[in-house]
Image (cartoon, rainbow, N blue to C red; front, side, top):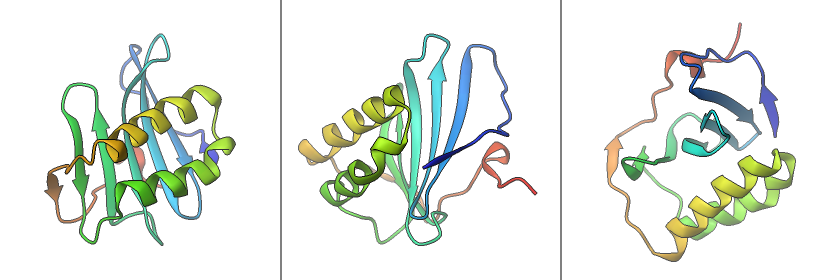
Length: 123
């Protein structure tokens, strides 16, 4: 995965990061101390239709239809996690394994993932 470095930052207390791969787009929000505040793991052929989302305050939910099972998502993520910075791979991986191990059924928020302004590909 390669990091997209041109990312709009709204707050000095939170750092936004974007990592791109042929199958995934990973959007991460980190506190000033580096702790994971949340992530949106978009997946699929164009990485734009579905996502597993985790937020420290709200927990897990999905965007999209035809969702990938938790274990399959973990397997695909772990195959490329070595390409991420250690703290990001570790934190996101822990949340994904937690999701898969507990068989959580995350509610679906909307039928399709919608990228925020800061998640748009640079021109």
